[in-house]
Length: 436
Image (cartoon, rainbow, N blue to C red; front, side):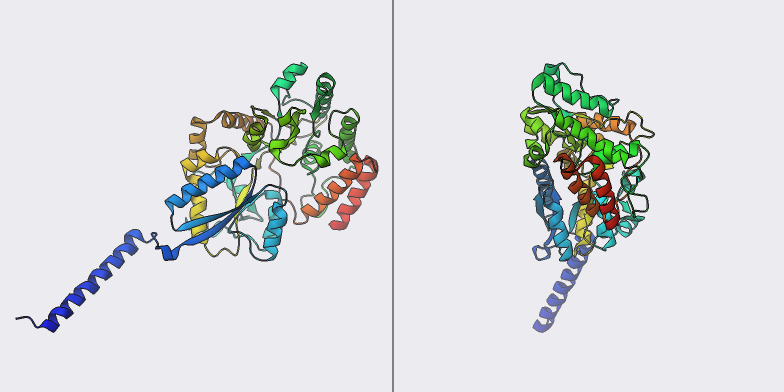
């Protein structure tokens, strides 16, 4: 006959063992399935158009369904003001866990130890780089360390309205056009239709156009060591600015006051309103946004060649990069999000080519096989850009933005005709030297 106390004790021991086995099984087979008490929130900041916001939010929703214990807090704006916000958060050591970056701004963040080196996570397999080529991984390396992951490949691009070109009887932009050819094109459009050929001849204000022009003449905007300007002949600066002034005088592009009054949103570019036949200051991944704004498909074209160029100045670039804050408290969850972002085919199809042509081969193949009209055009354009590209731009020095601001200040003085291009070249060189 069993003693009642022994019966209770036996039952208790069985229950404890059962719970122990259950706990062990959870650890072995379901260790990633955390309870609601283990809910983690990671912040993700990016800039972009409304189209990009919508695509990104859909991918976040998809990720959260797969990982219900990880919530992604979106923080998104347009380009204007984005870096002021990031710089302020960096100063306060409150950067988002995941930061959408551009290569030209990364070196300053790396120098200030604000970004996480992803190399150890790649080496131990936490961050999966399978099906991502070494050339694409190199785009995220700064000072030899993997400080970001390129979202896709991109190229500087202009966009044109075929209907307006047909109406004017002007040939479409060509890969072999020179800067002089493009200037004549803009003037003909203006003369035939009474609208602008373009808002500006190229990306005048942010140095992209000047960078291409310098490279075509065997120079660069920054010296390789990042301690000075990369060109000695100020006539290059003068000639580039004179092209702009000539087109302003002809009425073929916007004058200074018009440029300052124009809305910055891509969906509101003058080409979307048929007030200009082309837009020249964009990237290959922005086709969907600018075409949506126009209500019809616009077509991309490459920057022009230099008539006397000594090397190819056009280039491919990482469209942008995803970087991780050095102060993130949730690196494992962040790596799960990055793995999902780069490798999930459904997510890739949602993102399309908005952040460049994908770098993950399986995702790229899936998108290409089922590409939208826009994505097919972008794939073809990036292939064309790759066939006419020079070397990838080196990382810019930490003081790059100060130098670019100095360039912009002089640029505005020149197009407002407060100083001549020759005076501007000297002023910019002096101001840049002071900054260096």
